[in-house]
Length: 240
Image 1 (spheres, rainbow, N blue to C red):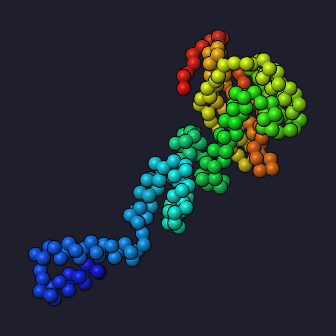
Image 2 (tube, rainbow, N blue to C red):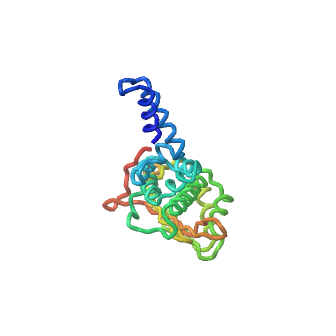
């Protein structure tokens, strides 16, 4: 409408379409006026489907920052499909057919929290800190731990004693954790992974189970087993 009014004024003043210089000044001014009227950026004027697709290229921190810019971007950044795509990009393509009770954004946050706790478990092993391991485990009589030796330890005290023996016995060698997969429910989560031990090129399958108590996740079960191929230990190591 601003363009039409400006063009009409141009004709009334004896101008014509050939007055390109005047028109070039009028049209950008009209575009600016339109943007000021709508108050929307180019990103905000995109159709929802295109916006959602564009958001799938953002990482977790960027998507969170975008949600704090304004109300329109907050609605876009909270789109369930964007968080589902981010979940598949950061974690796994599994669980594509599930429907999280509280939406994919909450499920992403819960999965990231479990991944962080699981990573802390391996940091504790690297540091051989018995006190930190004690804080990680739930102090309950039903917790269980199966080390690679195959021996089962039941109850909090027995599990802590097993880790003390493990830390005293194992003094070297790093390890790499690969193929980490997590499944999170309301008050329980489990994580599976492969661990490659650098010292002797052994490969272990590991499973960790966590329970949610008093606002935080605690480990309640750990199982480690040496991977066998044709009856012999796997010798291949994947370098990271």
